[in-house]
Image: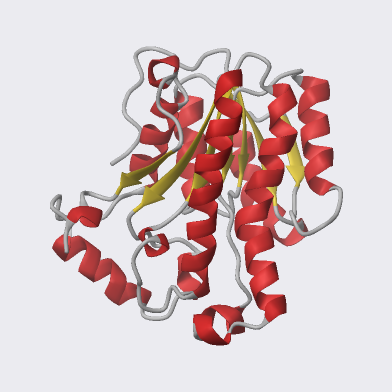
Length: 261
């Protein structure tokens, strides 16, 4: 699937921050393309100088007026990004958080054996960073808004080799529900988007991932794998006012794979 021809700029006037584009295979890139196609203006971040050469051409394609470094493990960088958004736009309508990380030795080992430092790093990058971004986005969402993060089926079922990341995603989904309850009175919606398996750079760190892709394609009722554009279009819809009474959800975009035993 590619981004459908857009006849109406349904998100025209909306301004959003997209965190997590690594290259043109990233889920965050699929989201950014969809939001832009529907008329939204985007701020984009990149992890570090090494990543910048891959992300900058994509930011240019999006005509992003704000393009800044953001490593959530570096103190002050999150605050600097949201300060820049506030100074240039004075508001924020949506945020896409599409980052997760576990040290390789922590991800490869049993959950039972996870060391404290590996656990804390996994939770900091994969869960706490979204909570912190929500805190920073809240004062900019004066007229309401939508916060998105990315999760996976391994949060609620044991998926072989997903290990500690499943624990982190379960915590992330719980945070989504609590923040949706807290921020709902201000018109701020919070969602976790749960795509089926995708061949992204992040997924390449999971052992035997090709087998997981094959299993998903064979078992999903749709009999096909989800694409980053499928994820992007569905996410963009949820930022529209038509979805204003949807919040606190884990929304599967996986061809129905999650319903099959």
